[in-house]
Amino acid sequence: MSTSTDCCARPTTTTSACCTPAPSCCAPAPAAHASSPSTQDALRQQVREAYAEVARASDAGQASGCATSCCGTSDDAAINTLISTRLGYSTADLAAVPSGADMGLGCGNPKAIAALRPGETVVDLGAGGGFDCFLAAREVGAQGRVIGVDMTPDMVSKARANAVKGRFDNVEFRLGEIEHLPVADGTADVVISNCVINLSPDKAQVFHDAFRVLKPGGRLAISDVVATAELPEAMRQDAALIAGCMGNASLIGDLEAMMRAAGFAQIRIEPKDESKAFIADWAPGRNVTDYVVAATIEAVKPGACCGGSRC
Ligand SMILES: C[S@@+](CC[C@H](N)C(=O)[O-])C[C@H]1O[C@@H](n2cnc3c(N)ncnc32)[C@H](O)[C@@H]1O
Image: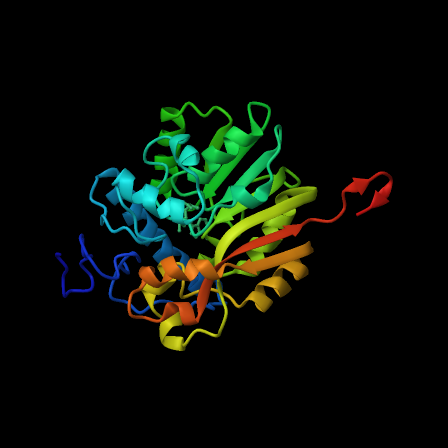
């Protein structure tokens, strides 16, 4: 194991707490419940730097090699297979995507709840290396399309290279923030996301924009980390826990209220207790599973016409 005592120099190899990207500098984390635009942007920048580091390390084959995490990464395909099968992906799923697309960064399998149909248009919030986009692309087929959005340029480059490698003509990746999606109104049949919304400093705006890009009757199918109890302030302020998909998690009731305010109906948020087994490994010794758990989050944008009546 090689680590540095200087917190500004990232450890390149760790055997413990390896599952959260190191904070990018010594500055304290911006408040996770940041409300001013500049504080929100500071938080986004911190998350962006952490995932740029993850993308570059993965490209350079310098990843941690740890077999535990959503938010750390490994360039070892066998380790990522182990992580992803724990999250609910099948070995057939893993074999169907270009090598390097599965970075072991998720906390569930949104495709499993999305019930995608041929011809549908899918938008993936925080697409990372494109893993879930490629799986969705196979389900919607040549008549459908998938748009992956990510705010980290290194991730978008990686995802685009993966699309070329796997000859995915019905997938495109756009650089942008999930709070301000670079997608036209009423485009998507389905919005998916895997372990990203908890990273946003303005989740209410994420749900508003997801609602905007969905067609009437369109659906949300999300895997994410949610809070089951108020996190202690020290955890909320911990840059590594924030970038590691835990520190900024919202309470289930708060998420539901945000989704309702955005206009969603048929909201269903289901915590997955079994996820505590892998979440505990993301921050060993921190008792994080007393506060957070992975969940599936589903909802529908009302307004589709069902045989002449509104539904
Ligand atoms: C934990 S990774 C998940 C990646 C991918 N969904 C997966 O499961 O492999 C989080 C990703 O979301 C992106 N991200 C985080 N916050 C974002 C935001 N506010 N807007 C757009 N992308 C964001 C990061 O750049 C990173 O690629």
